Figure 1 (cartoon, rainbow, N blue to C red):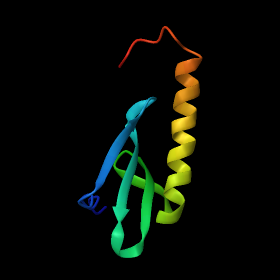
Figure 2: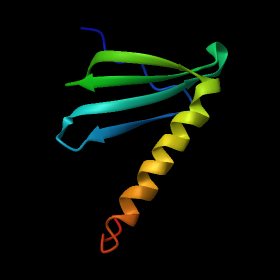
Figure 3: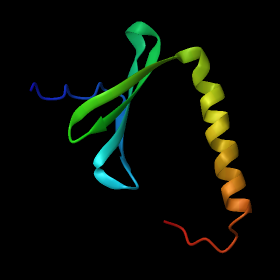
Figure 4: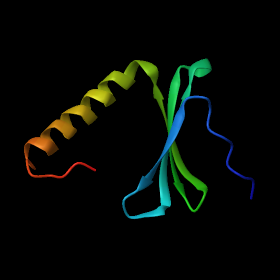
Length: 80
C-alpha cells in the first residue's frame, strides 16, 4: 500500500478523541480553489470531501458558533 502523500504547505492533522488510529486531515489546495477534508484510519484514507473555498467561511462560522455554545453551557470547563 502506498504511503500517504505529505500535507501541502497549508494543512494539519487532528486526532480523533476515540483514539489516534483515526484522524481528520485538512489540506488547502489553492490551485483547485478547494479545501480537502479527509478521514484516515490506520494511515489509510477512508473518505475525503472537497469543500469549495467560497464555503469555508460558513463552515468556520458553524464551528465558531458551536464552540461558543459549548463554552456558555460549561462555565467551569478547565482550559486544555
